[in-house]
Image: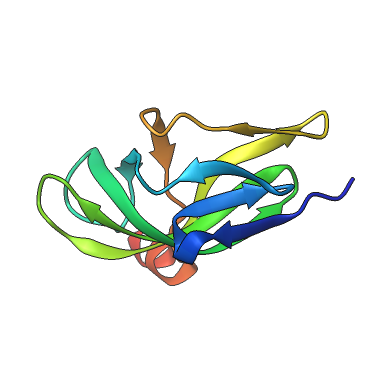
Length: 110
């Protein structure tokens, strides 16, 4: 099965199979990670800078800002949805998301 994923409209959308599916206008809840010290962090995405698929999971690279503390940083590999039975199913932005941490930072915490 092949799906086409890309960013559209200067990073405002993630398109899956030529259909706008995920918008930067949502606030994502990040439960842990290296984005900021807020737990959970409520992050408004400002732009998608990349998108990829690993297995059935669709990941976005984005820039976001924490609504509580104001931290503005990139987010690498934020899971935004998955492919089930050849159909894209977006994750709920308000649901708690587990950030994928960079390997170096994860290793230094262990």
